[in-house]
Amino acid sequence: MNIAFVDLSELQYRIDALDDAPLGGSQSAMLLVARELARAGARVCVIGMNLEHGAAWGGVTGYNVRQATSREVDGVDAVVSVNFVPRKESLKRMFPRGRPRVIHWHKNDVLSPYGERFAQREFTAHLDHIVFCSHFQASGFLGQGGLSADRVTVIPNPVAPCYVGLIPPEEPILALKDPDLLIYASSPNRGLEGLLKIVYPELRKSRPRLQLEAYSGFYLDQGAGFQYKGQDLTAHYQSLVQQSAALPGVTCHPGVPKPALAQRFRRAAMLCYPTIYRETSCHVALEAMAAGCMVSATTVGALPETTAGYGYLTPAAQESFDPTNFIKNTLRALEERDRQPQETERSLRAAVEHVNRSHAPAVIGKLWREFLETEIRRGGRGAQREAGAKGARGPLPSGRPA
Image (tube, rainbow, N blue to C red):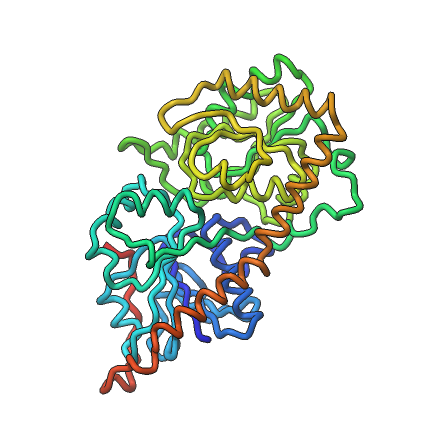
């Protein structure tokens, strides 16, 4: 089995970034699945906008889209595009010797500006299958029309290996924790401002010993643009993080590698996540649960599905959120932990086991391998090879799709 992942995002990362550098959620999931497929014997490459050409990691080869040639990706059985749908014409230039099975792995919400294009049947007509990361996300896209259910599959996101077994079965969870340490680890447009300006100061009034560690620097360091209703809020978030140093007990950190962040989660008592962003899956919630953290979040997007009954969720919608209720629910959860530590210990243990059982890389990798094997058999790639395409060596098409 020969698989090519295509990532046309502008994020800067290395093919081995999971081990010692910060990484975004989509790229983390892609590299984890790629490595698991390689471990199972597949030939795997990742074609990206800013990858070092020819670099390899865990059996996966990285190609820079501006340097890669069709010969280097010859023989691909299935191409998996991540978030950005490649044009049909681009795929023909990329794989001139024969059409591989075309799978699109979408991570964004149907309400994103790009999501509405999936309602146009011609936009996805050249795709053989679409993979979503939650049933919440899939139902949104199916509900707007343009896609049929037989072309859609849901495969959950994996957590990084450093989170699997992070809390051994014999190790008491609450004994590991600083009971007053809260943590936030996501892009700044997913609740960081409300946390710093409203939620955390109010929580401190009731529990003055609370501290907060915020890990949001990776996205700001990358220069990612944060748009809201046509306004660029990137500089605003950068200023917010800089000013937060004046808040008592708050430390804001630059992006850190996942193994380092896992150790901070292992120490923290709670993920405090007052988001109104419609996430299609929530890596940070899975990571917190794997590390034995309580999760105080909202019911927005796929958070109820991701937390699987183990979170403390405040009812909210994208345009309707009362921080007062979030504050009350967060304090209530901390008070219940103090009052009923044994029950909390059991609940946290169950959450750890759930993530290890359902989101370990080996588990998700197996789901992807079985899915891709089925798709390749359906495609009959060998029968689709085009005559007269021998010897094509031109560079692959670069740039984001329209």
